[in-house]
Length: 95
Image (tube, rainbow, N blue to C red):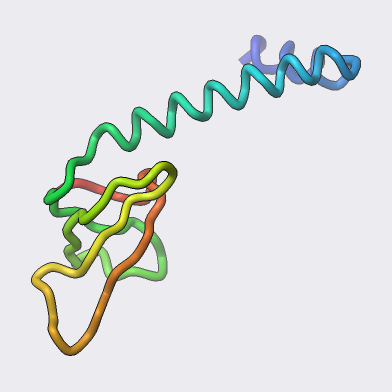
């Protein structure tokens, strides 16, 4: 944990140029993590949405992998009720 504390101390005392460089590195790291999360899924995969607003037993199928989100639809499909969502990959769990 001392490394994290050292980083926090550095950020607290950093000048604008150093903070801009940190932001660039941070944004790239976040992008890599998001790409890694998305790469775990393929169109047609069955998943659940891990969120307090969704029933953990609800099953969805991946319809499309977008730049930032993944489009899912209820499985099996219900012709009377459309359950389609765009979900952040970090909220999906493969079945």
